[in-house]
Image (tube, rainbow, N blue to C red; front, side, top):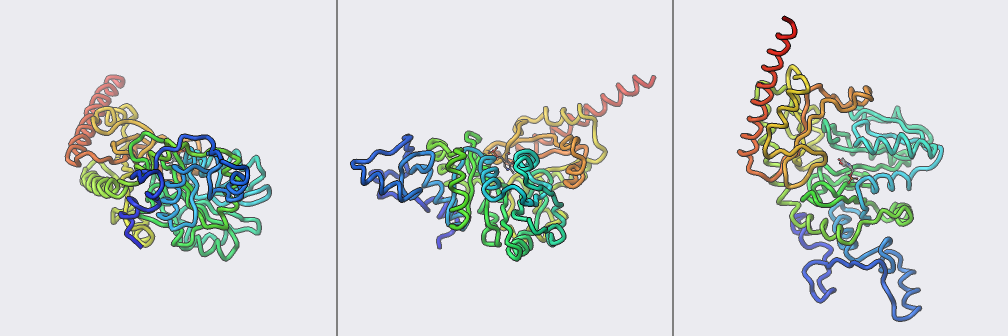
Length: 405
Ligand SMILES: Cc1ncc(COP(=O)(O)O)c(C=O)c1O
């Protein structure tokens, strides 16, 4: 088998088609036509192996799906119009009324929303667990437990679940496992090789890599594909050929982008750790990270998204001053693009204290997505942010003194 970097470039490209075009073209066709009715019937019998109607299958999307399946060491992949479409389709396909679902508490907020609304309305019993419980979840398993949903690392405080242990327990109890593998990407973590059944991604992050596409992916074995694909087809959130093209293009440079972003993120994390204001750096590759050993036992590297908290939380206006002073870190949601981003996340889950506590969210905390800029420029930028925070803090103290007087 070729190395993953070579596969990112070449796997799944059939250059004997399309007059030798080096990239699979954008097949902007809602349907495919046939010379004879017999050919049409034969194509329909082949299902997703042939092209009849683009909600079901499309050549541009098929190239992307072949690449993702291979990278995730799965038999099949399905490309969706968003990460949430991949996540909700996987859950809806594998759960029914009366089933019990276990979900990692650190999952992405809208995933939690799907569980607490859509799935509960369907009659699914939803229960959350802390990542620390993942080495032995047996006390949570019931006779009707059908799915365990993981997100490792989580994307706020980067909690890690023990994938091998969860997969082993699930298999012993005929339970399906699903993981959101967006943070690590298959370059750093291949959950199917650790026994997990279904991998989901938002392709909006590192796969696309240029903050210009919203997409989702799902990868699994043939048995589960036969269960999930018909739901994907009728729920209808298929990725458009144009966006499938962008994702395939993004994948070709995923290896070099991630290597640079990973290096930049670690350097920034180390610099932050040396700052007196910083209390903790939440980065799975820092030796004092609580699940460092577990992370290293199941991942080959770390991507560019991490968080840090500060001693003595500053009032919100000083926190805003820090992020407002930055030139290269834009303020915005999402992550995984070429550009650096920052968000103050200390106010997250104030309304759901059990999640806030489980995720260890602190009052002054920032999440950064480190991009491809020169790391010295990023550090200099962050220095400006700390200076602006200090200035805002001192003027806040002056104004408080004024109030006291
Ligand atoms: C970890 C994670 N999973 C899933 C999603 C949802 O992806 P999308 O926005 O493509 O629907 C996101 C989006 O930010 C995410 O961060």
